[in-house]
Image 1 (cartoon, rainbow, N blue to C red):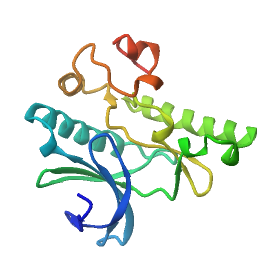
Image 2 (tube, rainbow, N blue to C red; image 1 turned 120 degrees about the vertical axis):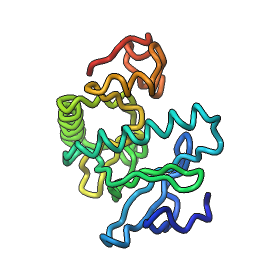
Image 3 (spheres, one colour; image 1 turned 90 degrees about the vertical axis):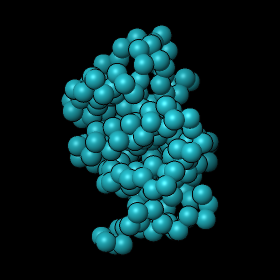
Length: 195
């Protein structure tokens, strides 16, 4: 996957990072002359049922987040498949993950911490009002842009409350989704979460 030059109409410039099931690429949309991030899942490494589940999650993320036009939520532009790769094309954020600031050298002052918290809470409230529950809030899914503003990313395990039939197929009852060390007690116990 490192030698990839393009996906659909998007040109690949390099690798930004590695996710649980694939890579995130630095890309270019030549039609709009816009830098983008491209998140991929290598479906050939999965059994058929799991590949179908991840493809459904990708589609759900695109549809759910595409409705969320908020300054503190990473914008999703497109979804596609090519060969054994499924991919999401997103807003490119010039900056770092929140987890990269967890040392004394990069620590935020108290005023910045409060502002970032308010931005994230506003983004979560906006998503919840639109019927989207993120379910995987963690430092790796919070980006800090060049202007020191928070951007909530990766709605891949989001629950879309208005389409329960679709959600029920993607996430079995009682199944845990998310990162255990950052889950709410309700998630860990397999209970329904509504916020």
